[in-house]
Image 1 (tube, rainbow, N blue to C red):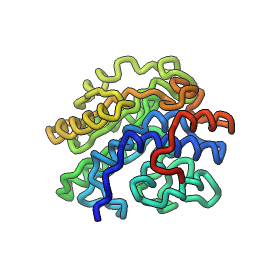
Image 2 (image 1 turned 90 degrees about the vertical axis):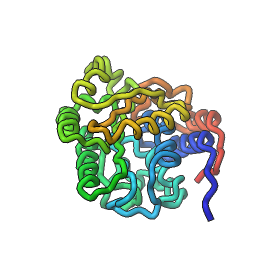
Image 3 (image 1 turned 180 degrees about the horizontal axis):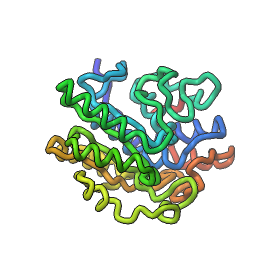
Image 4 (image 1 turned 30 degrees about the vertical axis):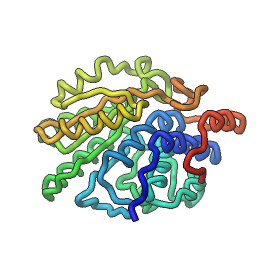
Length: 281
């Protein structure tokens, strides 16, 4: 029997509950970026990608996703669990000893849905390019998606990979930047200002579009549009504007919540703003 399609707006709220509870329970993790990217993950896994929760590492005939900014693992794990890759109850083991849900995704734990260890910033785009080229060699017409952070654009490997993908016409690749303007040490523009990021990527030979990453309908429409832009000789980049900490008022827009766990009282405040919708783990 086909499972009914969940209410995606309610699912976003539930996954935000998962995120703050996971990070609070171990008093470690990265809630800010995870909360900000919730709509993106829900859109990708519940509307956009062709994927199978039974999971094979090769993913032949499926769309593939790679998380480059691996520190936002809470939203990745919560989405995978809610999509049926593993039992939702396992979210309670986040960052615990011998858990498969480590702070940064790792392949040696054999967690379904994880195809590459990530968290050392700057590497995810290169991995995604390799996977996209492999699909072309195997005559597999599905897409490869990758998510990066905006602070991550300060890494030199990103720009080497950007040149490579455009030069080799890797046009089955759809990359997205979480453009929230914050990184661990402060506002991105104060650490290393990215200036006109769209112009930079376009000058490197990519097709670039922008959309609101905290409006679910805009995310879905933007990702659908990206698929129509792909396959025409150029890789595609989405500049996705988000708010760090979206959904929890005292976290929103502040780099201070990049990697800080809420205490007991802060958790209560967060959960009061995020109604339980499809059931806590």
